[in-house]
Image 1 (cartoon, one colour):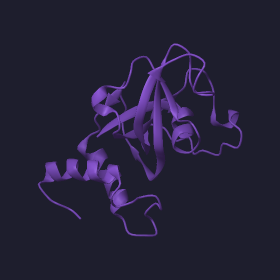
Image 2: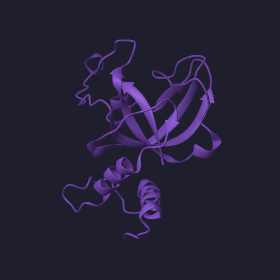
Image 3: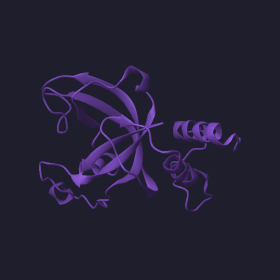
Image 4: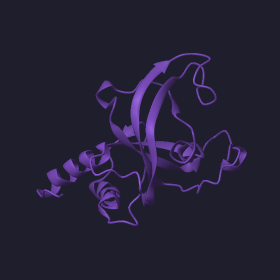
Length: 163
């Protein structure tokens, strides 16, 4: 499972808001299209100086240097005058879907591009999906992609098979 580091407030706009386009300098690697990724909020704010309060009705938590949610890399394209209001001209637009916040952020050091989180980070994300109700988030379907991806990764490391 891969993670993508995004500066605030845009990471929050993806997992808590309506941002479904991430601007990048290159296309999504073909092997990652359709996969679930972790959304990592960068330690540093975005260079533009935009903050969450600049967005209407944004009451996002503004967490930094942590995995804060998940998303599916749906598609990508390079175009101008599209994906309003998030798409930037002359960039690759990474289209996201099924964006969801984690119940509890997982502290992690990010990296450029798609990166592989440590086994400890993946474990800390996965256990949030194994917890019984009521701490389990309502959208966490036991058959969801992220569970299979994370479970397979953890099972491969530990040699265990979990429900």
